[in-house]
Length: 125
Image (cartoon, rainbow, N blue to C red; front, side, top):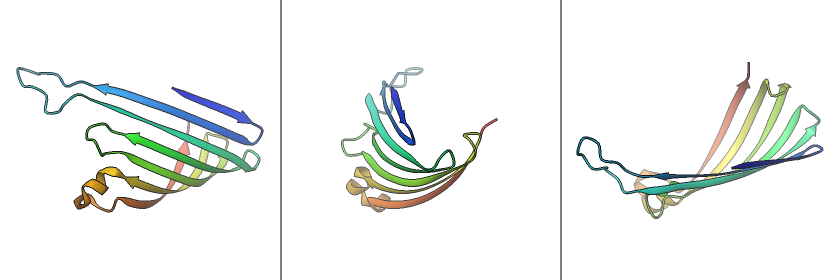
């Protein structure tokens, strides 16, 4: 389920997802995992600093994979979108800080908080 609100230069977008995963027996072999439910959401706010060209964005993301009791991921994002030719061609640069419950419970997989800088190009045709 998703929703979008646009008021002048301001955008507010949100989405919620949920998937119930049920293991099934194949050729007499039982599933290798228990049934689980994955759910998550994100909320994004955007504001055009230069109309139709430069947009600042912030986003909160929350994902619960549901396979273990302590496997949630939470992220906050800040970034800029530069629209070269509307949505058909744009550049995006984001800084993301993530907290990982799974890594906190299992430190052998890395730090439970980490940062990323991502650059993307969107081309639609």
